[in-house]
Image 1 (cartoon, rainbow, N blue to C red):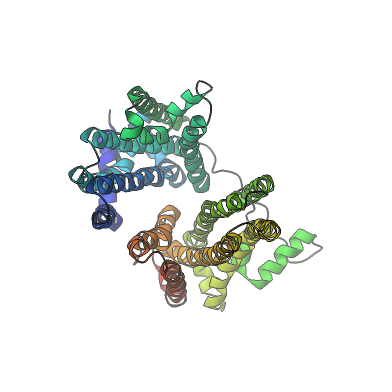
Image 2: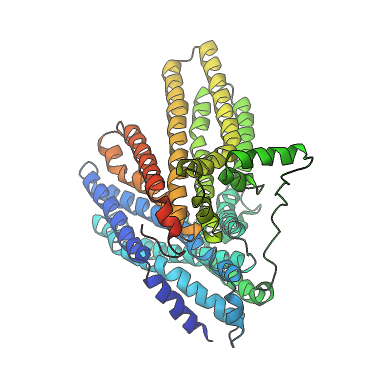
Length: 517
């Protein structure tokens, strides 16, 4: 095998990134912060309970990290080589498909492995506090490594058969997420009626590593561990077999024929494009490609329809409707991630093609360029957001009518909580979308890869503030958390707007691949 030179090349490239070192420090720092909070909480409860709680919290965070980090590092590594034309140069040598795939696998997983190793010593503090056995600790380490192996292998398979960046990322998330969801869906079935499919899920592998789930059925953990690991090797084998046959394919579908003539009769659609072009060229260029918001439409329509059907089935249970409104948070998060993803593509493609620099050489004001990108995001996501918000208001209205007519005890408090949840949570959700839109547009300028820009946007705007608010929520009963989240969004919006106004020309003139922030 000749994959070691590829590993060396990719490791040298990753060693030059500042994010490689920041991820290691961040993983250890987050683990230490969670451990410190749980050790302080152990003063209020027994040491055994504190150790078990710290172990559960840190392992869940580590498992989610393995899922996301595996996709983030491997989803676009092979498809990017196809777009840049460097994959064909590799096959001109004596390299085979498995050499390239194994080399990319090693390079994509090494950063996440180092981050996990940085968190394991802190995770071992739970053994000292009690409530966790060494067998449980060892099984959890094996399950986390297995999850990372599976997600990297599945993402490499998707990347091997993809060329377009968006399709590679979406396919990697869908494939990994589908096998993760197989676990809870299989567990919901009666015994003996398809529950064995759960053995292919990393979620079952992870949850069965806990002592409470492992003790009644030890064989389930080991069978699941072997099944997930074998499935990961299957993805790698398929990627190695298909990669030499797919690297020569076309560059994808052609762009829509979209430049309408300046003169002559035009149809309604062409007239609309001409109007957009006369208003703002950035808006016209961003909206020229259709289908960008399909994921947002699917999420909004599916969540709204399913929520309304469930609410009609729970008309006699106001408390269940309140829980249904609380379940809107994952849907809000999914749409926010979609907005961040599209925002990270606003200026990246225009900068690589030279169109942004051409725009800056015209008398077009800077604020119109920024406003065009923001208006394109608004036009693309406004309708899905409105549909989802209308569904939540309908559920709230049904709940208010039931409580007003039923006279249930504690109904007024439940209604006030539901109103605060919908209005306050909806307001924070809109601010989160505005913040990720502005920050994503800025990071699309300073990062050559949209995946890196999206990861930084999600980390700084959504993940890092949420982790920082854990101590305040624990010791201040969460009263200050909404106001801190509000201030966070306003600060990020102001910071991104200032950078876009002051440094847009500077970053557009900088060579692609070099950035200052």
